[in-house]
Image 1 (cartoon, rainbow, N blue to C red):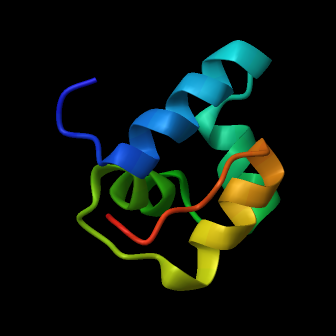
Image 2 (image 1 turned 135 degrees about the horizontal axis):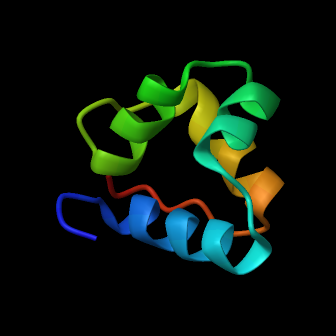
Amino acid sequence: MKGYSEFGLQARAVMLQKNITLTALAKEVGVSVTYVSEIFKGTREGKKYRDKIASLLGIEEKVTA
């Protein structure tokens, strides 16, 4: 997926495997779909939410954007 950070690519791959929508993930995290998308693209750091997203998806959160 063009424009995604390494974290975003990994998260999206897991979401596809588990059939999790961006809307459902954003709701679970407690932020907007746009904000989650910006975290995945690396345009927003989302430090407060990256760990929660990683935990929900069962992936390892990496320091790189």
